[in-house]
Length: 146
Image 1 (cartoon, rainbow, N blue to C red):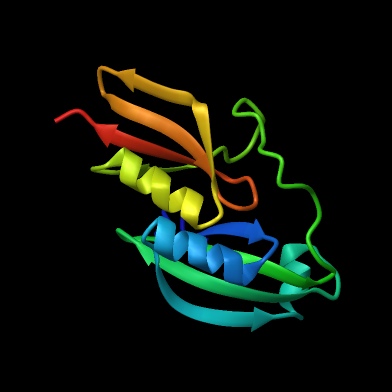
Image 2: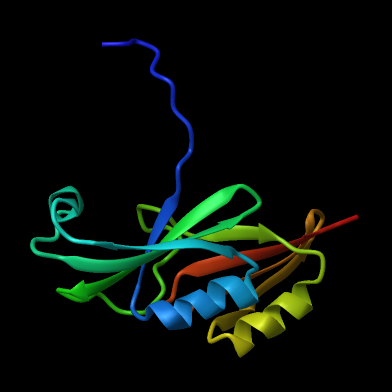
């Protein structure tokens, strides 16, 4: 076994409830570019630990970062679109640097996302706010101070 294996970043997977709605949100609101779609079932059900699953997924890229939006056609998604507390273990949010926070907030609303207006802060490092995608995944917008 190699004690120094080579690694590189691949992607971040996000489970979503409606692929078409999420494609619109991530492309039109956040500027990700669709690279390709895939469909999956066995043997990936073993990898995902979701027996007999059937998925459709889209891979999207922006600024060298790839996200995979996973739509489980079988057995369906579990959970709710209620956003997770920031201090809950696990991944908490995506963060994007923007040059016009208000314009991006408007696009997020038009594309089915929600704005958490009470989270907006102006700080020495810039203007920040949390929004969510249509399924409650937190997205931080950060307009840096010039």
